Length: 366
Picture (cartoon, rainbow, N blue to C red):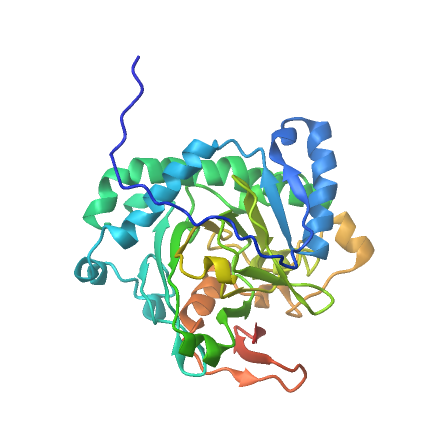
C-alpha cells in the first residue's frame, strides 16, 4: 500500500546552534523507551522524582518521534506565522483577557514586558481537539497531522511522564493520568510560538529580558527542543542557567497545578526567555509546545494519600481542600492576568514583582 501523501508546505530553516560558551543547567536526561517495563519505570521514576523535586526541569529522549517527523512539525509550526496574512490573523485572535483561554492567536505586543516595552512574540494555540474552533485556511489541510502530533504528545509523552511522577510519590501509577483525560474538558493544547528579533532600544529598556521569570500555570509543560538559545531557569543558588539544545529531545517542566497537587514536592520552576547570544540574534526562534492542564473539574489540593508526602511533609496553600481552586478557575485567572496586570513590588525579595490570583501570591522575576 503506498504511503499517504501530505500537503506540501514551505520548509522552515532553523538557526545554526550557537558557538558561544554559556552557563548551561545540568539537567537529567530521561530515556522514555525504557518505560515499557515495570523495572524500567521504577528506575526512571527515581530519576524523574529527583529532577522534578530539585530542578523542576529535565530532558526526554526515546519519545518515539523521529528527527524527520520533528522537522515536518517545525515546518507546520511556521505556517500560522509565515503563510497567514495579518488581516486573516485578526479573525482568529483569542479573546484571552475576556475568556481566560489562549485558543487562537496571541499577536505581538499583547504582553507588557518592562519599561513600557511590549513583547515581540506571536503564538498560535490549538486545543488537542482541533475541531473546537475554526482555523486559518493555510492550516486546515494540516489539521490531521496536528491531531496526530497532539495525540502522540499526550499518550506517548505526557502519560508516561505522569506515571513516573505518580510512582515517585508512591501512588498508583495511573493516579495522575486519570486526572488528564484525552476526551475530557480541559485546556491542554498545542502551541506554535515564534519570537522575532527586537530593537536595541527595547533590549536596553528590558535588560535583554524577553519574558520575565515566571512559572507555568498548568501541570506539565512539554517543549520540543530547538536550537536558538534563549530559555533560562532560576537555579537554587539564585543564578540563571541556560537550557541547552539537544537535537530531537524534549524539555519538560512542572507548573503551578502540579506543585499544588504534589504539596510543593514537584516544584514549578521559575524560567524566563532572554535575548539569544550574539551569533543567533538575527534569527527568529520557532517553538513547539504541548501545554498540559488537569481536567477542568480537578481540585488543586495536595494528593495527601501519597506515602512519600506523608513521610517528608507537604505544603497546603489552603486550610481546607474544598477551598483550593479547580483547575478551570486557576487556568482562567492566570491566563487572563498574564502580561495585562499592574504588578506590585515584593516587600521581601529584590527584583520580584507580585500579584494575587485566587488567594495565591504569584511572583514574576525581573
